[in-house]
Length: 175
Image (cartoon, rainbow, N blue to C red; front, side, top):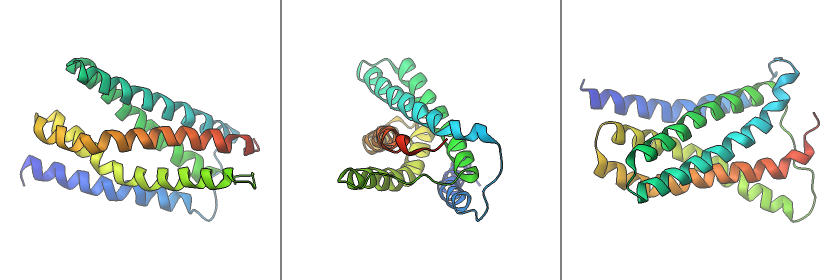
């Protein structure tokens, strides 16, 4: 099997395994008891999403200025933040009950719109991000450019709506 085929296999596998693992961990009948420190994770997740959005915007700005080195650094930082986000998110939801949105007014619909679109697009953006990085790292810049036309705005939307969802739900955290 060629290196490219191996890489595509891993990208496909991760694109399925990550959302599946998250769904399984979210649906655990009994939450893991990891201690009270996990109740700080939503705040860390909000910060991570904010930093990811900033990194993505800066990466975009730097590539428009033809500064490839800084573009790579900020995209790499966004990628690492995405991995840290995933670890924090899974840890929190595997060990803490979900918080319900407490308002009973029109903001509830705004919240659920952002939450649902955030979740659905976060699932879809995983393979796109992995492919964008694969193409860039392997010098397939034309393919990289083609996919990031879609990947960048979706990833940015997911990051920004993650912050919005956090800000809307945070008054209802009990810890």
